Every structure is written in C-alpha cells, then in structure tokens.
Length: 398
Image 1 (tube, rainbow, N blue to C red):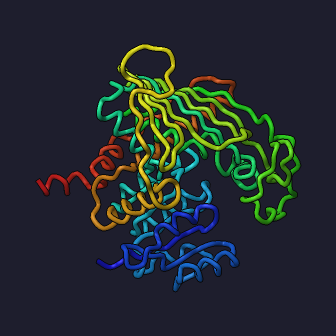
Image 2: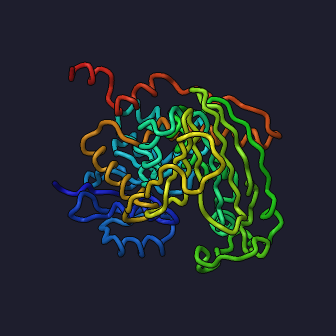
C-alpha cells in the first residue's frame, strides 16, 4: 500500500497533527507545505522533507501529486480554504473547530455535499483513551441511561496559550467558549447521545482584560509557549486585542432531554478537565485524562461519598500527542480517504458543537438570555450519516 500524499496548510500551533500524519512507509507522508511565514515554511519543509513549499495554498489545489489537504490554519480561515480544496476535488482534513460561525460550518458541509468530496474534521478527543473508555462504560449500561453531564475545564496556561496571540481577538475565534470548548461540547454530545437544542451562558473577562499588551505588529516573545507566568496578574505581552472571556459557564439542554453544563477558566493554577456523567443507575467521573489515569464508577446504591468507588478503570496506554488522539484521527482519516464510510468523528457533530458554542457566546454577551441552536438541513445530515455517500449510490449497492 502506497503512502497517502498530504499537503499541510498552516504550520503554527497545530503542527502536531502534521507530525502525527507524517509516517513515511506507514500509510501517509507530508509532501507539500504551505505557510505565510517564510521562516516557518523553510524550517518545516526541511523537517518533513517536503518537495513543495509555498506561501499561497491555492497553488496546491490543482496538483495531481497530492491526495488530500490538512487545514491547520487559524479558525477564521477554515471556511475559505476548506471550500476551495473541496471544490478542487481534494479530500480535506479540517482542524477543529470547523468554523467560527454556524453559517461558515453550513457552507463547508454543503460544499462537501455538492462536490461529493470527502470532508473530515479533526476532533481528536473522540480518539483519546479516556473519552473512549467513558463511552464504553456508558454504552455497556454501567450507569444506566445518561441523564446529565458536567464538565469543568481548568485551563491553567490559558493566559499564555490563548491571550498572547490571535485567539484573544473575537473576530478570529468568536470566543473561547467556542474555540476552546468545541472539543468538550463535542464529547458531551457523543457521551450523551444527542445535540444541544437550547443553551444559555454567563461569562466575563475577569483577569486578562487590564494586563499589559504588545503594540500591533510586535512579535510574540521568544519561548512564549514554554514561559509560564504566575500569578496570572503577572502576565505581560498579551495580544494587542483582548476581547474574549477568560471565564465562562454554559448550560445545555440536548435534543434527547439530557441536561449538560460546561465551565471554563483561564486563570487556574492547574491544567486539566473533569467529566462527570450521571445516569439513571449510577455515575462516572474521570481522574486525569492521560494513560494510567482512571475513570471511576459508582453504581451500587446510595451512600456517603466513597473515593474508592465501585469500579475503577485505568485509562489505556497510548502513544503520541493528545493521549493518542492525534494518531487515532490520522489512522481514521487515512482509511476514510482511501475507502470512505462511517467515522467516529463527524462533520455534522463538528457543526453542532460550533453551533452550541456560538449561541452560548451570544447568550453570555447578552446577559444569559437562552438561545435555540438552528437546525441543520436534513439532506446534509442524511448525507454525512451515510458516510458521505450519495443516496443513489447507496441504493445501487443494495
């Protein structure tokens, strides 16, 4: 089996997916790179041994020596680049989130539908060991039918990761309740078996709004991702625009009746996320999200709190970044490009997580007013549920 030949557009903070996808002789390799920064372009072309290195991604669209494009650019560019690639007939991998508005997401989905070109969205948490373990526990019935899901996300390095570059500008992200939470909202939907129908939220820019910022055009400090300042009020050199919230709480009612809540904070001293799923016959909770951490289940009856739980599951070992999630989505993407068919990640689910985040952000900026998530065209839902196979083709196979 020959390697899939991949072009990667954008080699900044999300280059980890390109690294995971570069497996010469093992199914896929990066043969072309595109980035607006000439220094980054030269460095990454040398790293991957890419024979093609360009600043304009459009020069990659008509190349016959590329099987697919990986779009790992800033969020606000996903729609244009993904749609250009889909119209050119290139299979596309879009890093999450799919877009920063509901309209952008719907345009990408419709373009994939109309062109028949394969679209994949990199929600790598669906391939993380801890998430797959929690889903297995739920599907096995160990806690009965899921009724409510709670997520707490402590983003301890958030001020350094998200407030020193374009993430802090709502024009580029809509807000961190979308940009950062898209993964977690998607996991809530996956674990609970439904999509958010109604949402409300509260939030504020509590700590990072008044901290010193860089002048426009000033480069980020060297080693900015490895130099963490504490306490949060000591942070300096923030992006010149900071207008996204650094703390938020979000409530969701799903279309199957499940009630869910998500909380995010960017000035905690620790960095981790905690899931609690309560069902009709018990509850589960994760303690850490990496290999060797645990998911605990309480399901034998009412008692006081018991730290030992009734069942303790160990999160399986995994290689690579994001708890093995990046390797998992690369494997699935390569199989999907070659064969098509159903995938654990879902463009429809990606759209629904963005939609929930968009409406939650609108709610928190309107004082907590609840909003309903707009429905998606049923034809698009059906197309992607069929594994992106046209209905006529599916009928002919029967």
